[in-house]
Picture 1: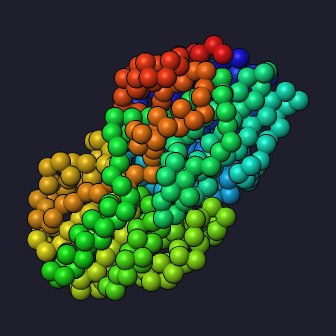
Picture 2: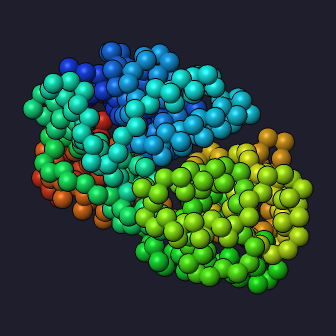
Length: 415
């Protein structure tokens, strides 16, 4: 058995791992969001693709892979819906930013039609000697981690995961022991996240302070993050206008449509009912005439309704732009966070709004990663999806006495 490292090794983005057994199984086939780079293309026959969850760095090149290989594609119902939303938007962004385009709307339709929908607890038999188990990764609604059993070997691939619960999902749930190989994300292997409850209090206080001072609290969110922020505001009893714009509307509706993947669907329904959805610039201009909260895409500030709001509000010192997610390097959002300048194409604005950032990561923090590795007790750990993979592999080896490596893209691991 072999594992081919196609993408996401010693980097964050374009995750993809090819496992050669009697089948050719790929876990994830993403895109490097800031550059549009795809994973390496598999050199061997691909029979099956398992997508872990609805983020572009894990599924962004899946339509391209499907067009080229016509492989079987497996994922949860929620991820299938996120896939359609994200791939269509990624096409628009690629055209605007002159990024590589490898698939068409027709390819997305063909991929969606072919998807075999799976659920937590399923065991997918690919051949008499190969099966894949499906477990809850606790990352976002519908996120999964996979266990491949083949030829007497067991391989665990985490995708992105989180052990601790959030407002939206209950945290990872799995029954996996002693895999031969663990492929684990290590995005935050170098630091901890603040306690969720403390982050929620700080976020709410920042929003309330902005509104009490007569301003607009503008939150550029990753679409899938919107339901959690809505639920926080609802839980704290926010009594100001709350607006939902861009793909944040669609992602919230997807979560509502899949109650089986949401921790408390009634709470999400209540929170969503309190939000007013916006569609046109006239509605947006009316909304910002009074203090309010606006949750809108895009989180990286590279497109979407956020651009319109920035043009209208950038000179207002009573307003705040509030980030709740990681800002990818070389994006407009990251540059704004670092410099106070909003630069996008011909747009160049010196922003007078307050610029705030809070950590609402849906990834495992450092202690969660170590706890997870100790719990599943693998024979070998392969560190990926992080900027500190080599350092973390060294620590895992010294702490647990487990063989741990941080391969490069293109490497082949013998199992």
